[in-house]
View 1 (tube, rainbow, N blue to C red):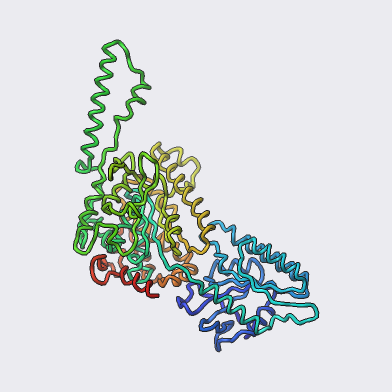
View 2: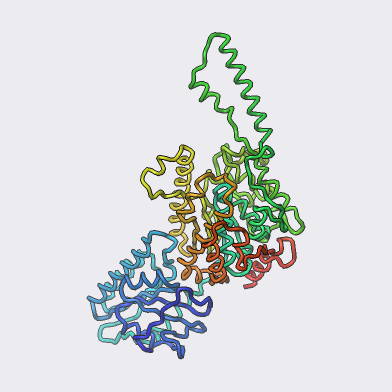
Length: 579
């Protein structure tokens, strides 16, 4: 093999499970070449070897900066750290320092989702000073590398990098790491965000649907939804497509009837709750009049604080529950968690216990899905709490931002989170101060929930390094529109466009890694269709639903529902079980 001929990995690597990309980090090009010369070469492919039925293309990196740059641009299945500097103490010390510096850099990336999983790192080590080698293994192991292959070197004996038996051991150990059984369980986690959050999630998922394998959005193993995410995830779990939900929300019927997202309508008032608060107000007013009759004037503090219970949430969650219940009562659909081929978990908050509850989990799976959606989305001050089995539930975002924690605990190896409820970062000093109290209250809540999510995610990914995690959030320019009011039904098309473009930009940025992580799940990634749609969306001033389809013609995709023959989730689960 020619040491000057490198084999760079294309940003969108081939989605072939039998072809692996190995990043070699070592002291010199000569040592890299010597190692590969001891391995069976694949003819006509530079730096590619036969690893027992798999083709491994090796990419060398010399120095920390070179390695990090490769990881920023390419998907790597395995990192091999070469600390074999037998007889050269200075080389050994320098290479050990470089490896530790690299591991520190990998561990302290700004976005923990970009952190390389150290369970896919193999350390090669050799040296005549066994005490020095042992100490190096301890130090590097303390940084998270647990797989070590030691080449025996004894004083007076040769310890040459071109060593076929050792090279065979490298291939064997590498195969063990790459072939280690991993749960192929994918989880989709959709967070809260009100009506505008529903819109963002639909726009983001529309882009993903255009980029992933056919029916990939309807074949996740687990769906987790909170509030807005509960609405969207339940439709996907039952088998409806993103296209159908988007069409319904702009009044175009398909299998779904049009869904009216306008909240401020008389029909949406919670009459029972208003009547209850009205009776309380009447009693309080009579009590005040009696006090006045006795010559006691209540203070302003008393009126504002003691009588605050007169104010209740004005709207009923039926505005969400009724159309969902109707959709899930269609032939082939289901309103029963237990009838779904995939697991659906909808997060809500027990209002009195201040505790998060997962509807769809053990003990909470006998509740109709539509009723659980209502409970998950019952956010004060808009909606009253929802009574289920004698307990009262409100918006799940009160206690959790996203249930990705549950996804990891339940064995997901790939987690995709869509979170629209993030704060707008103002470029102009004093911008937030000039806005009203409601805007700043909204931004404060968004900041708290996003901080809670980011901190928890960072902690969980360090605890579960084998999990591939990706989060999609709005671009900052779109966040300004989302922050007007979470209950604004009007900007659906504008938010869909921003969400679609934000998501494609995210996929372009992480595509080199995502394509490999998806391939491990049996899913492909192809951006060409989304790029066509994005080009049209970028130039149209007022987008229509047709602009979200490559040929401009509205043609909502329909997949079989969960109760119909050929539902993709049932096929996918059967195939994974057989595998």
